[in-house]
Length: 375
Image (cartoon, rainbow, N blue to C red; front, side, top):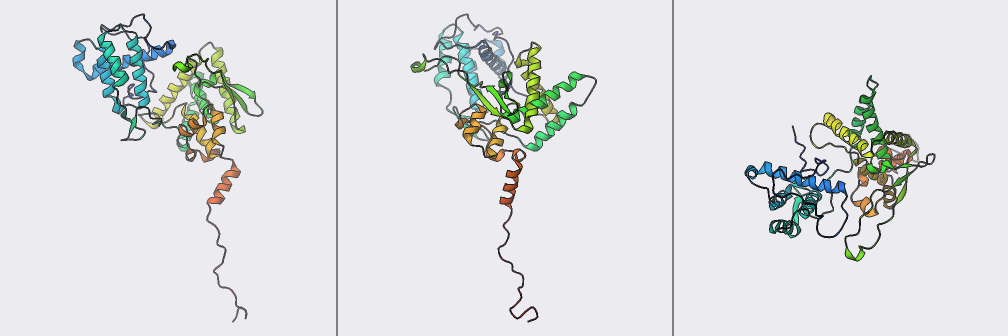
């Protein structure tokens, strides 16, 4: 059985809870981290400390002798650097940020100062896990190693499995989960929304298929650069996403599912996590162990590929997705990975005619002579 290693995949949700030290003499203090007075949300701080907790667990597992002494900050720093060839750049940066935040909560000593200095200037600039097997990346590489698209054949197989699990049974709860997930997958593929954006999405004009979405990707904290630190954060942005007529029923049903969940008093995050974990479970049952071939966020990448294949300009695709054209072009699905099933029938027929071999202009069959057929 393969192990889902939290240190190998930044998509994995780390264990919650503050870092307790487990006998270490380095306990967090009540002093805030030193440095630029940027606001760190409690959820972000909790995530940072969970990174440190994971690092410590992995360090202890790799070094049995460490159980007989205190784990020093430099131990975790050096262990993280030693794991660089096995980590994606973004994953490494996340754990590095977690360590830096944690070091800021400790009493300033020569040991904590040395560990912080190594993290700031001593990390390798290249040699990280690359986007393809046996390849490497630089620390700030913009290339992603995550799949953004998927084969339609495998998606249909997943939908068939969810349909089977949604069959009427005595337990309504058992069939509700696969039904909700199936609707979310179709709605995400039709709209390209980030999962969190469904919490506030609503119809602007149902008949025209105009979905009003509050863009989630925006900077809300103070700017780090001193020259722009005094500028206010950008205002909240909204965008209109055009939904195809055949897909509006999926979006309508998903909005109803989200609304029903929120009216029950539960946060949207629990609705998202329930569907995310269930999708992971179904993929493991259907496609075997290993990294699941589908995520809720992947619907966004396939949406981009489908729109590009239909010939929609990059600028319009980016506007629908709530991101810059460069991001839509670089990070999300490329045109050649778009599904042919989403193209208009007239366009499919035109492409088919264009790919068909041209008919010969001349006939090479025997022609009658001037004297007639019998000559």
